[in-house]
Image (cartoon, rainbow, N blue to C red; front, side, top):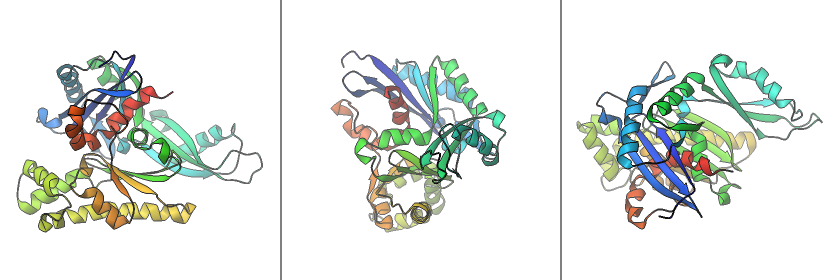
Length: 352
């Protein structure tokens, strides 16, 4: 490869695995390196869990895992962007009366304590205007998307980076990494639904004109698919994973398909509810759906979602506009959807 001028890491710490992507740039953006490590490496449970609705991070295991990954993969860059799980991030939307640009920050600050379930002293806040335009005429209401991340979570990630010798350039909610990796220039005039099916949770995000309008997480995800096979067929988790990926939602084995259908239908129902609500409120319709995450890599998954929702459905390919050696084509095709968040984080380094 030619000598590159920039390189950045995107790091996605998931429930049961960590994914790292290293991107570099000269004339275009290229994949320099990548790595993935399962929590099974330690045999002591997951990298992160939820306790009483809050994120609990295993700092020691994550630090050790990252150190191993950076060394064994030969990753050189020290500039890192970490994703924050959506279930550790509070999203809410609310309306404000029409007001000037200068008045909005104060209005958001006033509303925040009523919308966020934690003391403001314990969180970092961010917001964006997602509907309406600032005005002094008092005619058009404004819709605000408010995002809050606990300071404790941010401090934990910073400690991890310090331990392994990385510099944290930024931390960001997963949804914004998904948008950066999957919403292309030609899509920004459309309304897109990004469905990220992780290990422990699924997040449904609606993006209109490049702006996040809705983000909703719930607890039906890849682990539930595996458990359904494991319990029904009386097999261990490893064999259940193999069957899940081999047959998935195809008609190769109708009995297998029937086992997983109730969990998939629960996700489809959530998508339908959100798209129906979008139309009722704003008279807007989804143009297409992109599914991502490890749980999305079910054989026949995209086709099944498409038939049920009567919409175009694509499996995420975050490497679509990224250069990489042709010898990696088959490998990346199998794993690319699961690397969407890590790619999206690394891409932030190249934003102007």
